[in-house]
Image (tube, rainbow, N blue to C red; front, side):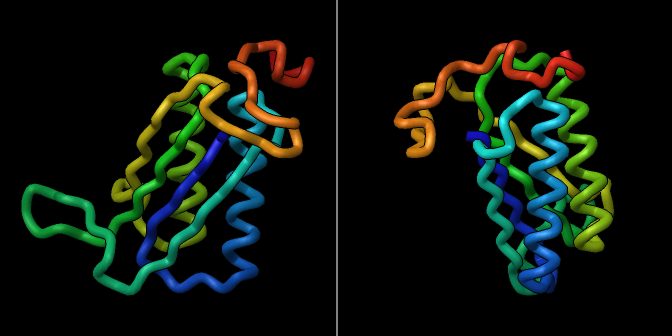
Length: 134
């Protein structure tokens, strides 16, 4: 944790996926006050017609970003992250920002296992943020 999973109908090279994953990880770490080594980013590029945003009329191409995160951040912080992710996804995939949906699932630290931590994570708290970000 955190785990960011993007489903998007777009053709992206491995290099573009890696660059997007790097940008998403950096934004997440900066906004959410988290260690970037905890990040897992999944980018599933699907064929055209695979991800749709409902409009009340005809659906349009969309993207879905699922954010599995440790609980503890306030609504404003999660809003800042979502807005940043929408901008990144729209800029890098061509999906209109209004058609990018972000969903959060919040977990306690002991619901994620990191071998490099030697086991389970801990619950998030503000002391994890870099000093200049508190």
